[in-house]
Each structure stands twice: as structure tokens, then as C-alpha cells.
Image (tube, rainbow, N blue to C red):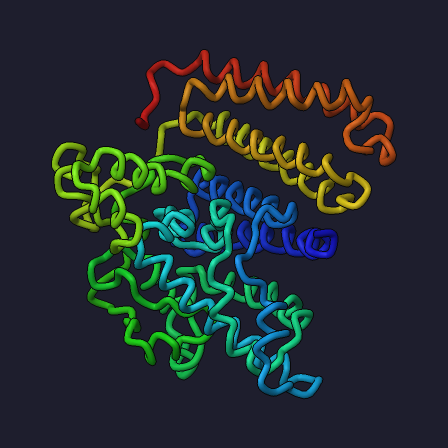
Amino acid sequence: METYGRILLIAMPVFLLLVLFEKWYGWRKGKETVRTMDMISSLSSGITNVTKDVLGLSIAIISYGWLADHLAIVKVPDGWPTYVIAFIALDFAGYWTHRIAHEYNFFWNNHIIHHSSEDFNLACALRQSISSIVKLFTIFLLPAAFFGVPEQVVAVVAPLHLFAQFWYHTQHINKMGWLEKIIVTPSHHRVHHALNPEYLDKNYGQIFIFWDKLFGTYQEELDSVPAVYGITRPVRTWNPIKINFMHLWLLIQDAWRAQSWKDKFRIWLMPTGWRPKDVEEKYPVFKIEDPYHFEKYEPVVPATLRSWSWFQILICLLLISYLFGYIAQIGSPGIFLYGLFIFLMVYAYTELMDNHRDALYWEVAKNLLGLSILYYQRDWFGLSSLGTFLPVLLASYFIGSTLVVYYFVKQQSRPSLTP
């Protein structure tokens, strides 16, 4: 956890600067691909994901270490071949994990967040899941285990493999010539994120595109079919925590409402989007039928709320950076209390972005938790070591934030725009 936290302390500002650069570049070139509130939602999703990962809030049914210890047939020599094999094996596993997440109802819940943005940009790359608590698909790393690739090598290569998937989430890079035949490019991934019928469930590759060509899931980006981004059942919220669990909640409701016991059980492993016929007729869910004629989610909010949302996420980034930098000193169970606060904070300010009146209650809950921590610790997890004034400044933020959100909620002249 501590090592990963240090890596993120370097990676987070780099990703943020690249996201902001893309927004500026789009404005400069007259091709804006980044909406402010959508970007804040994406960054907030990234915050929740890395918080979950650093806190170790997931378990593997079968660990890679166990596979390597028991199934190794040969042992690759130390050196660069070990890392190459590990990288290719991770990409093979990534292809199949990704494909399963798209093709089966239950596993789609773990991936819906990544496709929930109706834009396609670097920020949406940061929309990663917090709902994948149990890791089931370590089994796809069997090729690496057979070659005896050490667990430590996989641990080093895995973050690099993940970060290497960031750059191709952009509309500003066209087709890349001969590289299109080998690696996943922005063109390939634009197809993957599109909801056009021609593009749905294609191009699952993460680094290498040849897996899709080998297993029959490849689709070239067509000039005659401009990509439209998002999912066919739009989420209609900026709140990443809600998005992470809304498909699961729909499955639970459908399983409960289905008259047939067979449907109650099979719904979980049916193709993504399948619903029992009786439930679908009685409880219809909006679905985009024409990708070229639908309205993107964009609640009307004043410029002051946009500015406040920027302020909130910057405070959140500072707080999460402190957690990652001092995770060993904070220790357990303090890190989990800290994580709860971060999740509560993200939930509160994204509810306000959605124009939801209950944002005030979540904001009050967040700030009461923050003030309670300050009161009982007489500090904020050791923050006073960096400056005795910092806990006082944080207390002022908690009080002031409550008053600001109260002002915004009172200024709302109409009810929530979302269900």
C-alpha cells in the first residue's frame, strides 16, 4: 500500500496536468472534447478508485503467487525476457477480463463507470471501478505462471501496464499508420467507447490490438460512422459512487420482480442488458435507440457552482495526497477512517453538481465527521507536523463548506433534474 501510494503521488499530478492540457488544446484548436463538470466527475471517480486500491479493499480468490508456485513448468531467466513475458501475459489476461466485463450482466457492473462519460477524453480514462471488490480472473495469468514469472515482476509490470492505457483516450490523435496493426490506438479505443450499433462490444485490447483480431472482436473506426460516446442506458448523474452500483441495483430489482425463478437466477450471467420479459414490460428503463439524436447529461448550474466544484476537488486532491504520502504514519485503522471521509466528500460535492437538494445532508455529514476527527485527535492524522495552523485551516474549511453548500441549495429554484 505504501509503495503504491508513493507511485500515485507522482502519477496523479501528471495525469491532472495532461487532462488540463487536453482541455486547453481542444479550446485552442476549436475542437472542445472536455466538459467541465464531466471532467470533475471523471477525476472524482479516479480519486475513489485509487483510494480503494491503496487501502487494499479487494481480495483475490486465487493469488498469482499461488499459481506461480504450483504451476510453473519452466523458469524464464532473469532479465528483460521475464518482463516482456509478464507484460504480454498481463495484456492477454486484460483482454479476457475486459471482454467478460462487457458481455455478462453481473460483471458489467464492475466496468460501467469507465464507459459512463458521454465524452471521450483523457479524463474519462480515470473513470475506474470501486465495485470490483472480489478479483475472480487471476486465472487468466496462467501463461505467466507456466513460465515461472515471479510474483514480484508481475507486481512491477502491472502498474506500468495500467498507466500505459491512459494516453489513447483522446479524440485529438488520428489513425497512426502501421502502429494500428500492433497496438491499441486512439482510433481503436474510440470505437470501443462508442455506443453506435456498429461499434458496440468491439476492440477489448488494452495494449495490443492483435488479441481482438485473433478472437474476432476487432472493428476499424469508419469515416462514415462518427463515434457517439457513452452507454445505451445513460447514467444521468455526475456521482461516481452511484454509477458504480446502479447496474447492480437494477439487477437486484429485476431479479426480485421477475416471476420466473429461472429468470431470477439466470439474469446474472445473461448477456449484458438482458432483462426478464415480464419485468422489462412492467418496469421499462430508458435506452438510447438513436445515437445521433439524444441529449447529453448537462444540468444547468451557475458559474459559481462550477468554480465551487473545482475548489472542492482540489481540496480533495490535497487531502488524498496527504493520505498517500503519510499512509504508514497514519496506520490502521486510521487509513480506513480517512478513506471513509474521502468517499463521503466525493459523494457530497458530486450530489451538488447534480443539483440534488440532499447534497446539503451529505455535506453536513462529511463536515461533522471531519470536525469530529479534529476534535478527538486534536489534529488531522498528524497534519500539524507540517504546520500547526493547518488543522485550524481545515476546521475553517469544514464550517465554511457547510455554509456555502447551504447557500447553493437554497438558491436552487427548481427540483432535481435527475430521478
